[in-house]
Length: 189
Image (cartoon, rainbow, N blue to C red):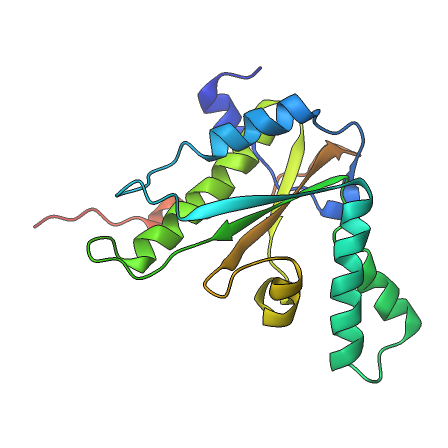
């Protein structure tokens, strides 16, 4: 396992279509989710939860996505519908991070949403630390209320991201990162 700093420096997103077996075992998935649960959570609200999609469940969820796409795109081709059906089957494991942020007397909703984002990033790092690759994405269906309802989300819940996990089919390419002088200022008072 790489040391912590090297781990942070080498994490790369891998396209879901480029993720393959082997996949994390149930014990590894549980470990990843435990790590993803160790994030800042002011008020101990646990303003997030997880939905794990493996095996045929990925295709069952994909049917929901494809049916909704068909209902909203009357001119959709069979190829487009099939593409939508396979949205969650591109990677061998998909974990939805669900934000349960809401009104609270002390903790702002924005802070709760950030906690869900931290959870998703910790999940990505946990996968990387275990030797897997991941990609945290949201696509149209992450914002479509009928899809979310059909996937079992409550009215107050939203998808912070779908984290696709597997083994990279090829080494991920590095991409250019922002230059620090373009994104960092030093407050001088």
